[in-house]
Image 1 (cartoon, one colour):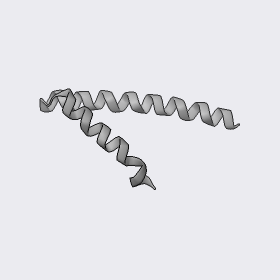
Image 2: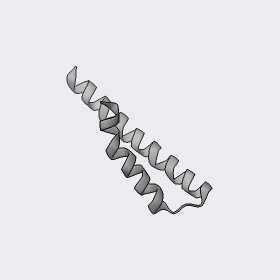
Image 3: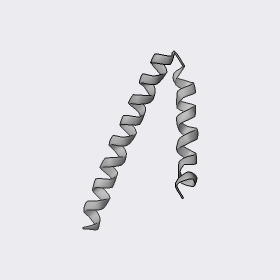
Image 4: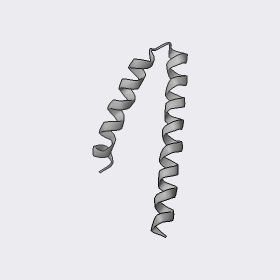
Length: 54
């Protein structure tokens, strides 16, 4: 049972990350912002998220 939860969690993380990147690229194109700026913002939020959740 634990392995099933592990596998499903990993699949969820992969699809979530793909969705996040696709959305960020779409927003960057609409707002005409460079990919670097959007990437830096996502990395900043992503590294701060564990502290915000706990």
